[in-house]
Figure 1 (tube, rainbow, N blue to C red):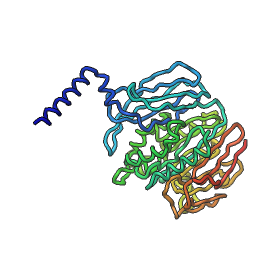
Figure 2: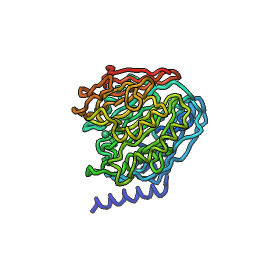
Figure 3: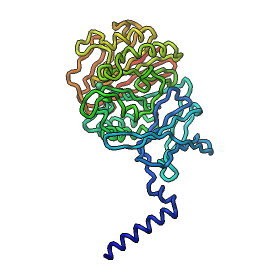
Figure 4: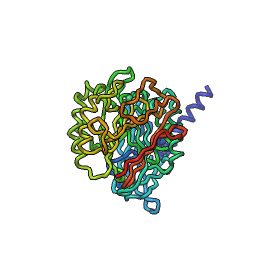
Length: 406
Ligand SMILES: [Fe+2]
């Protein structure tokens, strides 16, 4: 009996204290921001999207930020949405900061007055600047520490990179939040500090039962530019960085047929207009699946037949793809055959632990690496006269390097 009295007294005291001092309730329940991340915007000179996750809460979530050399802290409330997952509901908080100063480093933190994150830095792009970016091929894993090791190796070898690209199949099953959490953990050395430009892969369009579905969780997790093809925002988008224009395409016509029929054809008017209107010197396309038949490698597949005439018309410099987990680089191609000043097609390899032993070299590839020994990543360096790509193994041994000058 005495034990019950004791429990009752403690309970009354706790409730009474919270009632008397309501700020303590927030102190007790304010959730810790997790997986703070920067996401690419259409114009990185003046804007940046910041997103993070918390457990469910009524506590408003904010971003506080200021230029490094300023004393004036700006505070803005984030937009909060429910993040529905197979592990339960969370909240995703996100806001695109605008009117940032080009070529400037800011400090920022996120959360509520009772539970802020650490302070991080973000740097806006300079107009027409030199830049470098990391490109990570398929990161899907059975053990996501492998993905994390590739990330750590790449950023250690290239600490001044300004943003990073993931070529799709970020995770093995796009409906499994456990896998997304493991992926986010692996990307922690990058996500709070430089923006990600992700590309949807076919594995983002699988349900937990391995049936085709919309890439709902992918599109929830990444608050992407909404400037893509009609009815396909986020799945397609474009952005500028320095003197380069990047176009992101969706290659999942098979997976999304029941939800978004004629997916490839739907992107063509937007792709054409997007490439026709950019004034940037370098044009780069990012697409998960490649454009050549596999393993009948001499022919264009349906994606190639639809997109390559547009790439040729607007002189796209490089097309990066993934999906087959091997590295390969073609000679410059025009209408799918070798030609001076054509487009270079790069199959980027794999940054996770999934290998594909049946991958075959394409007829026009000057280098091919099945990437069975270890994962890899690419470094893209761009300035006003040169576009340079370097492919490196996880241990940073160089697989390939090439340049386009113009
Ligand atoms: Fe894939």
